[in-house]
Every structure is written in C-alpha cells, then in structure tokens.
Length: 69
Length: 346
Image (cartoon, rainbow over all chains, first blue to last red):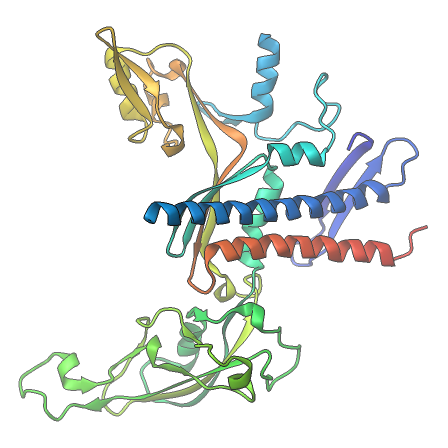
C-alpha cells in the first residue's frame, strides 16, 4: 500500500497469545484504513486461492480419469 | 539493461551462495524500486497466480502455487499443521486393565490413533462439560481378554499358536453410538483409519476393558489432533549455467546434482551440459566443493513458486485439508474484521 510508512508486529511474550501490531501511515490517512483494506484483500486472496485450487483439482482429476480410460 | 536484469534477479530469485543465502527477504514494496509499480492490485495478483496439481496419490498430494507471497504460503502450511480440526480420543475411562501397559501409557497410545470421522460433522465440546453430548463426542469401546489355546502343541513357543487375542490391534476398537447418533449418522462407519495398529500385548489372564471418548480438537492443543502426517513446501530451484560447460567438466557437473537435473548432449562431437529439469534437484550444493565448477553455475530459487507436499493421516483426503485450511484463514480474517467494526474507533 503506497501510503503506509511503517508496518510491523511483535509478540510480547511467547507464552501469552498477544501480538502488538503497529501501522503508521503517511499524511492524513487514518491508520485503520490500510489495516481494514489489508484484511479485506487477504480475504479476497484466500477466496481466489480456494477457487483456483478447487478448479485445478477438478481439472487434474478429469484429466486423470480421461487418461485411465 | 544489465541493471534492470540485476534488479529483476534481486526481486524474484533467492540466490544460494557458497557460504550463505542472499536476497532472502521480499523487497518489492511500493516505492522501493523506481520504475516498478508494486502497490497491491487484486487483478494483477489474479492474473499471475496459478495452482498446478503435480501428483495425487492415496493420501498424499503434491501441488504448485505460483505467484503468492511467502507469508501467505507459510500461513497455509502452519494452519494445515496446527489448526485444521480432527477427532481423536481424549478421555479414556479404564474399567479394567490388568495388562503390562500402564493406564496412562495406554491412554496416550489410544489418543494418537487417527480416527476416521469427518470433524466437520461435529462441534467442539464446551469447556467444563464432563459428560459429552451426541453432537460433540464419539464413544469407542475396547474390550479384550487373552486366553490360552488348549489345542496348541506341547513344545511350541510361538505366541500366535499358544494364545488367543494376545495382540491388541486398533481393529478391536468398536464404536458405541451415543444417544441419537445412529439416526444422525445412519450409514457412518466410525473406526480407526488403520486396522493394524498394535496397541498392546497380552498374556493369558490379562484383559483390557476401556471406554474412550473422542472429541474435536486442533493440533495447536495437542499434536494428536493434527490431520497431516506432514505438510511442507519448498521453493522451485533455478539452476543457470553461466558459461558453457564441456567434456569432463560436464560429466563432473552432472554428478554434482541429483540424477536427472543435468543432461549431457552431444553437439558436434563435444559433450555439452544442459539443465534438463531443475525441479528435481535437492540442492546439496556439491558444486561448491569443486574449485573448477564453482563459478560456472548459479544456484537460486524462484521466490514465489512454492512446491507444496501434503500427506494426510487418512482422516480426510489431502485436497479437502488444503481447502479447509484456506477457509480457516478466511474465517480468521472475517472475525478480525467484525471485531474492528464492532469496537468504536475515535
């Protein structure tokens, strides 16, 4: 994202499941925005990966069944 | 031109030098490289991304994911190992155990046996719920007693002849339906995935009588809940010959790599080496041990081409496991988004 100045995370203590996540933006952009956009983009990436994977599985299986016959 | 090629190499290859690995981190964030537009673009991602299935066998799947970032590929791998739920034996009620195997060891072994039960049909058990209801528990019984065989020959010392039931296998575990489970799962057949897992050994007079409760759990809690034998990935190798390699050097080069990677062709009477199939190489870096061959080859890996290898324990087929892992990652994003929207931000 071109307006994000800094983005990082650290785990305060390995026994506690707590993560400090820091986003710093350039200019007047509220920091929640890139965070929300990031999560939404990750959702759409996962959805696309899922669709592509299932499509490839179907094609592979169809091709394999054809070869068997 | 050469400058552009160098930055391209920086961006999409991880180079294996003689003493270390270079260019490990992804550096393509916006603003870092002038002339490249690196801002996130869903459409560009979708055009470049592809999944190729290489091989699918009984319980094992090998597939390629091209065009995805390392963090996301690693996230899939970690979720496959630790967060895809399965059913496994959690509580063992021991009514009678006169065998040599101690109660807790027996319980530990029973917990590790993979159970063929689709975890998506069940719920998680509520915290503090001791009894277990039909929707979150599967009950199994193991009741077996060893006895002497009266027809055995006098001098035989083979335990298979002398005793009945002296080996306790997982096939001796039987499903005991709870409540209305027979109606909920009319044609289900819940049993361990493998019938020939040896649980304990008995001698005449010893018996085991236990009742087991299986619950749904994730690998993060206990490794017995992990649905994969293992899930791993590697990056696609990329071997380039910087100069033409001939004759004896070519033969030596072929021996340095895994079989099938380098092939020798006969061009005009001379033997010339050519990279045939870089994918097969396991990167032992044997080339760096030979002074004469060190500078002729560049060993690298393609940064965003991941060769995944998923091997399932048999509970769910591996492609279902991968789909479940992706859905779990989506679910986490969704939960986070809901949290963000519900907490008021000033």
